[in-house]
Amino acid sequence: MSYRDELAHVLPEGRVFDEPDVVAAYSRDQAAWAPVGRAAVLVRPATPEEVRQVVRICAEHRVPVVARGAGTGLSGGANAVDGCVVLALEGMDAILEIDPAEQLAVVQPGVVNDRLRAAVAEHGLWYPPDPASSPWSTIGGNAATNAGGVCCVKYGVTRDYVLGLQIVTGKGELVRVGRRTRKGVAGYDLTAMFVGSEGTLGVITEITVRLLPRRSAQRTVVGAFDDLETAGRAVARTAESHLTPAALELVDRYCLRAVDDWKNMGLSDMGNVLLLGRTDTPGDEEARALQEAFDAAGATWSTRSTDAEEAEALFAARRLAYPALERLGPVLTEDVCVPRGLVPEMLVRIERHAKEHGVHIANIAHAGDGNLHPLIIVPAGDEAARTRAERAFDAILDDAIALGGTVTGEHGVGLLKKRGMRDELGEDVLALHRDVKRALDPYGILNPGKVI
Image (cartoon, rainbow, N blue to C red; front, side):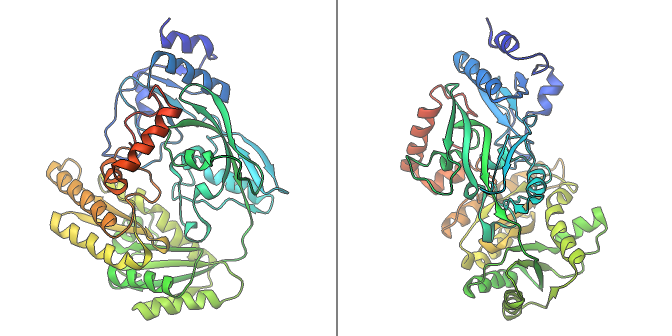
């Protein structure tokens, strides 16, 4: 019996699809320039046992399996490979438990980030990881890539909130790793290993996350700067002042103009580069100190906002920057992270590469933790510009490594950052990665060709 016949036999009707248009619609993420293979079958499971059966059958027939959530990734990590089964998990979207006393939630992988945040807010709780894609991205995808977001400068990334996982390994075994308790050091931290593994070690079928009490009122601080280097100095100054804002985001005028052209928000005349800071400590002292750091670094103007709607509009513009720029043409998205004190130098190097390679690079950043997202914009159909953009992309990766940083802070390696990861980690460390991969996926069927 072929693997397709076996899948049709063990799964309920309406789970398996092989129509080319349907399969193709689930075969890639948002990384427009990452290669895409031709998947053979799409499976939309509804239970962990169905996932286990799919992986078991694929392991027996040595058929690749590529798991995906909402497909909002930016590195090609969810892109199909030739002949694979695409395992679409967005239908497994139940919030199984919210425990206010233990401050945890148990969810299936298809639960959308913002939906979980809204659900736990009804209990006076908060789930901090908040990638820009939070209205659409799923907790399973967030865990697979170890997603970060606006709040991670103070509150950490997805790995800091995942207590336990239910996983299907490459051998088709359904296992649990982690715990529900606040503390626990029994055995290796396999949970942390699976978070960020991009579907190469196992398929996540359930996630237990820890929650925090709902935050107190926030204050927003805005600073405008003439150029990226000066804004970068304000980021470094903030770190030197031992301030840890709840958010510190950078947006340049090009991004604001793109948002204005799309949403008519009237923000693009506020400055060449904006830093958007948020504080959530009681009182006004931290907000005042953050504004003073902006001013001392050379802000042309700054303010502490008392208008909640105005403040939310600024952060909404930050979240809308990427989709707004996509409307202008293909976007090659970077995701490098450097020490905060070297943010000014990295921003200068990014501008230099834009000039040297003749490409336009817009800039947004989780500046507070040194996570920069230069966005290389290319006219549609301009192959020469695309080649120049790819060279600029590689040069930015090289500079991040040279400055003691990393080639990806939160988007993952996928397909686009494999060369950069090799250069960053070195062959000895990559050999350890491959050993782990072979132990959990001995047939090499889980998201093959990605990451390592």
